Image 1: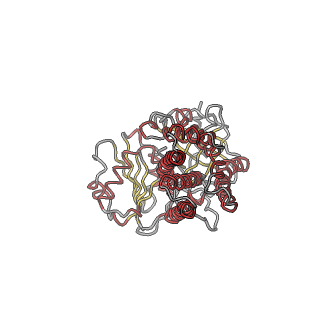
Image 2 (image 1 turned 90 degrees about the horizontal axis):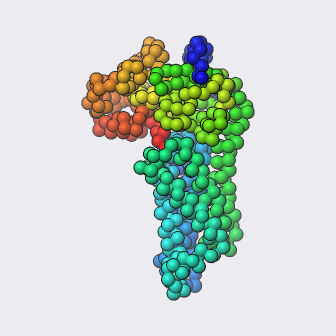
Image 3 (image 1 turned 90 degrees about the vertical axis):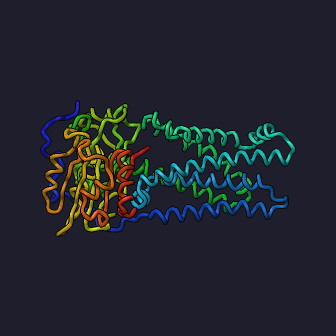
Length: 458
């Protein structure tokens, strides 16, 4: 059963014990830079097969151009998608995990359309050049070298895409969705040789080498940041569960102890992907924010029982070994651009904001206001801790309980928050509430660059 021992030494330590992160540059790519690089690469990849078509001895035919350009763009898009989800710190800290996930989702839909366009145009081109029916042309195309393996890879990609459709995804547990998503890597591997042997790269040794290096690089990023770095950190920091502490009904805090944890350079507002090494949990990494400022010996995450995996975490045994990927996320104090700050939390979304509430620096005359929405007083997590933190000069907390204050409207924010438009706003809460807050702040005139959030939808 979870530990329910006295909490002395397990709750977050005084601020004086919180180590500063090591000095030095923290390399990261900004969203505009990443998008510009992706678009420039896509333009170069799309132009190459068009040039080849116009330089060829045969008259240019639209299906042929579509087949070649869409095939090259699909192959490039797959490499981009793998790179975006490699969890490289330069992407995670600069762009943010939620934005990367959104790009990955949109890019995945584009890649699926490109793959289908490539397959259709290739069959049509074959049929036109040989005067065959589409069904016979499709059969002949499938008999080309490596096309069977590529077709299997394409079917795996389409299966994952189907599972990611919103109304389907809602019916699938995070653990099953995550495991099934790994099939994408098998699909990519099965289609890779076909890309190298395709007419746009075959015979162009330099381009084949560059294409192979592109794929080698993105898969090396995945291997490094999703496998090797977490394993190295597990060996170096030897993290284990030291206690599981009840907070409110259905919510527990998991205290993870380790050594030299300051080397992880974690910050309040960030999250890790936690893999707990038990027989029924080790296969899935769960994303949970730090709910207290990190120290050199302890990290704390707080979990609400929302699904099968998070429910099983309620019964973690002290001593369970932990592998943590991260830290990730860009919702840190470094994003602050204004003197005053507003934190808006809902439900278990308080976890990253509770850590920020304690650690955001405050100078003379600055105001830090936390608005915390909960269904009932008993559901307000960390209430004693938040009240204690609110005693420091400039920090305030206001609880919005149940329906007492109405919806999270523009009028509510204008009433509760002085100089709203001159603040940075940090937001974390359930999707419905977050959408309402986002809309209300936009209607109030808050500039988009002053709103900072991290979304954990899968």
